[in-house]
View 1 (cartoon, one colour):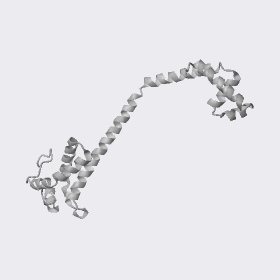
View 2 (cartoon, rainbow, N blue to C red):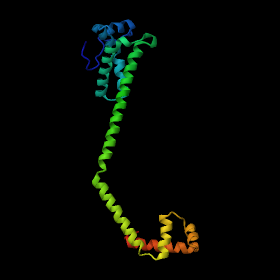
View 3 (cartoon, rainbow, N blue to C red):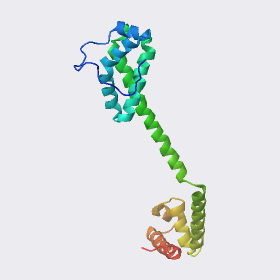
Length: 198
């Protein structure tokens, strides 16, 4: 069998007018290298063009073209004329191989992205983040202890238990305006204690 590295131009200067016949493909199935050369000449341009349009990469297209032509050589005996023309069979092989290559490249890129994301989160970073969170929690607790009892109670109900200002007023049995004042004063004290500017 001839070496399949790059699609070569058909032997004649004019494009071939004949099609790959089932008989010609049958000869390829029986191992006839000359028949394969004729099939190659008849389909090389179309097959490579289809693959190139799907892959858009010259080197990848050449590899897939070689795989397709090798598959035609090896599986010519599987061609069934009742399912379609020989050209359709060959072009289907080419299209499937090209799409498989695209999917394979996309899957590989996805795996690389996932691996890169996993590598970003190192155990040291997680430990330092946990330490920073614990430090902030201690600082918040310390600053909450500097508030008056009424301010602390209002802030805890609103920010830690998720109550609205009217709900806090109802729970504490005080006027809404009083709750807003306590909250404002308490939040100012917390901001100053934690060293937050702005």
